[in-house]
Length: 219
Image (tube, rainbow, N blue to C red; front, side, top):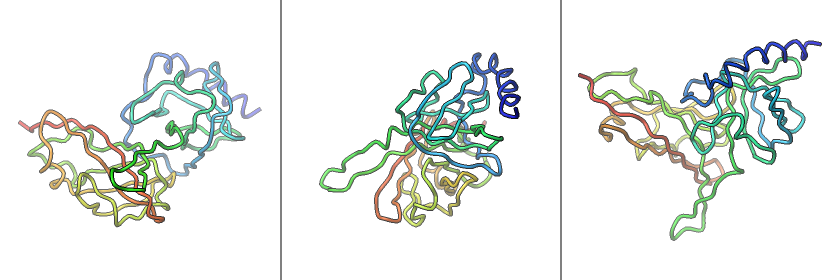
C-alpha cells in the first residue's frame, strides 16, 4: 500500500519531469544524507511510472534526479535495458528514490601509448561550474567523481597536474576531491576550460575523467 501511495505521488510530478525541469542538469551537489548506492545492469524500464529495475531494486526517477551519460545530461528515454548504471538515492519503502543515475557502459577503456595498463574513464562534475577570475569563490574547486572513494588512492589524485588538497566520500560513498582554487584559476582562461581528473585505485589501476567549466573575468 505504501509503495502504491508513493507511486501516485511520484506520478503527480510527471508533467514537470516531461517538461524537462531538473532532468540532467549540471548537478554537482552531493547526495542527500542517508543515501545508498546501487550499481548493476538495468533489467527493466517502466516509462509510465518512470522507474528502472537494477537487480532486485526498483529505482524511481523524479524531476530532481540527475541523469548523466558520458558526462552529459540525458533524459529517462535514454535509459535502456542492458546498460550498466550507478544509482544513488534514498530508500522509501520498496523504492530507491534516485538523486543521481549515471550510465557507466561497464567502464570505457583507453590504452596508453607504450603502456600495458589501461585507464578507466569515469564521470566527474566540477563545482563551481563557472570560475570567476579575480574573485574568491570559497577557496576550493570541488570534483565529484563517479568512483567509490574506498577504491581510490587519494595521494594520486590530480586535476590537470594540481595535487588534491584533500578528499572524502560523499553520502553514496563516491569520491569528492578538493583542489586549491587559486592554483586551478591560474591555469584556465576565458571563455571555458576542460579540466581532467587523474588518479589510481588502491590496486594501481589508473582512471581519468574530464569536465568543461565556464571561465569569466569578474568585472
